[in-house]
Image (cartoon, rainbow, N blue to C red; front, top):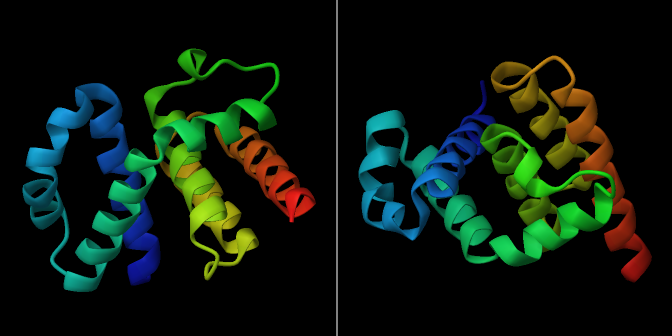
Length: 137
């Protein structure tokens, strides 16, 4: 797995911790990253993406709500919410990362960590977010 993919996976896991523990996890984030990644670049990217996504969680959740019309965030698993929040954050705030890369990486994470239907769902929601963002520009 390349370093950016590893960082995305780690960021999703950290976002899951934030979803469960709330802002309390900020105090634990550094230790969590050190325990789960040996590479400095992986830790740095995961930290940047995790903090960015959590600090912008309301904006990310709104992007998800707009794209997933028939789903309420509270009905999604914490894993799926974390994958979608990371993807929404990267689509909205990380313009240097191509949208298709964000979506493909999120699908791979969903395949590894979530249920059978999750990859298709993640693809649909993030693709809709990307279309909505492009339409706004």
